[in-house]
Length: 401
Image (cartoon, rainbow, N blue to C red):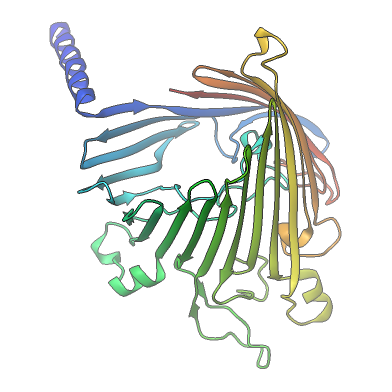
């Protein structure tokens, strides 16, 4: 039996080597956050979590296979003790270099406009929200086509499927029209990139209220027009601004505080100067619902304006000493008003979040420790009063192979 196992293991090793020559590669990324201390009510607690919340640690295995014309990507992860599929479980086909098609669980963020830094990579509390897709959305769909017909022009189009159960299939009209996502970008060398897109995303406005009759209107479908510009013309500066314009703006349900279909204009900037890097972002929600004013006036108020502003300064410590090579410190502050955060102008609904942190990079990972604080009970663990201050000291372990 031992000989059989040894032979099988040897065969597997030989097979893996031959596969690698054909274009199969393996990678892995994972992160765990130990909350060494945090407030919860009157208690000081300790816990483990993820940057985005949930069971910890996140460990993962990525497998990629590719040749000139075909390939696949598969992410398998474990959160705590629960296995699952990550962002990718896709097969792609590229008959020529200008054309690429994807099928499966697809995640493509080539045009996505993010504003991630600082506390986003520790624990996302308070006003540290929405930073992925800040100025432009992700392109991932279950069926996705990418065209690059000329230099600088990049076109994406695709739609989601109901699943792989024949009984749950969408009609082709609904798949393309209700669950489609389409984007186009043009890059001007040494200037920047212009992006436009339309995200259908299956949005249905079924609970809109008729102002005259106070009854629900018939269901309507809507999407979001997106436009963005990334500026790269200035040395060491990156600036991005994006707008999201719903085709059916307004409030989706009279008693609900969740709104997907509001106007948004967001901006993000990053400037590097030797060892210093400055980050700034600002976001708005326009024609937004105000729950407090709606209750006060006894009629729907959906013309409020919400905003978020924030920024961080990062300083690399490489020049301080050899022991601090690949190390950095940062300080961050963010503020979100009540309309942006909770769709209400009521007292204690806004939040101010701040933090300081230290990170040490290695060839295959990062260690970090930070202090985070946030006002008005906006922490990871709930406090007793709406205006309570919450704090935590997260310790981050992150690897990458």
